Image 1 (cartoon, rainbow over the protein chains, first blue to last red):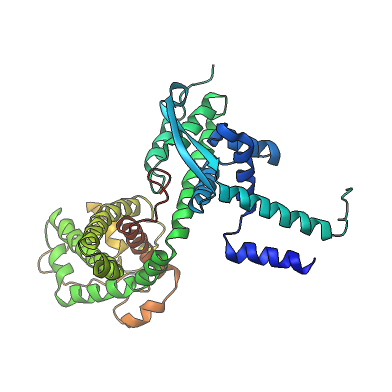
Image 2 (spheres, rainbow over the protein chains, first blue to last red):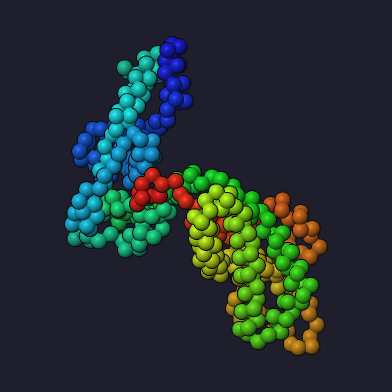
Length: 123
Length: 260
């Protein structure tokens, strides 16, 4: 690992809030879904990629944390009959959220590059 | 054919037991998923998971309150012993148990409720003093909300104690049968057939039955006593103080209606 990478990691951890693995996955799902990013498709997207069930409650808890950090915003849609008259809550990534995703990707890519080939992994 | 309605009990729990209140978007998402083919078991798991996630988040946001509730409930056995000694000094138990049922029980439980509430309210007031000084009238409003909530929560805890731990708290093992201090023992012995009646003129020979709360114990030594029985005695006080403080303290709101 080069010193520059180390500084980037320290900057991410101290200067701004640090993205957890689950939070990062949710942010990516929200970005990918665009205007259709609400609880159900976000959970399905996570399930599809992780290959296991996701608790919708924990997805909402993470979304709430992300909103608290200013990385996403949310708004209520119109109530629909198939949802028992309950509205969908749509999520959208903010500029700061996008920036943090890019930063995290850059750091992770740099760190992966410096790793020797892992045992059992054919890259 | 699959039912289009999710389990009513689970939905009711989602509406009432998610700390901080239900989020409309989440409730709608669960319903949409259920109607798209998810099982009843899946719905139940999601509701329980939602409750757990919301509780965990609230715990994380209110660590200081939890620490205070733990510390304050450490004092509960000492308080109970002091009340028990006061009872003994004033011969209150003797007087109560000479009364006809249900007055014997009503007076005993009345004293028990009063003793519990004084302890719990003292804790709530102590914890909210900074809020009172800082927020003025709003602080008084928070305090009132916490005190009112403590009564409701205490009632729920009492009902749970009556239903569950009669066999959990092994007070029956003590001989002679105990008329314990103002503690969980009285709560678990509401049944009139179990009240030891003392005929007028009989000698009063009641003992403190719980092994750890005996008259000879130094009240201060109970503060650091962490045996199972004292921990069980502390548990109801811990729960009531913590929940009442949650109710009283303004939660850090991200957005109204979204979990918190």
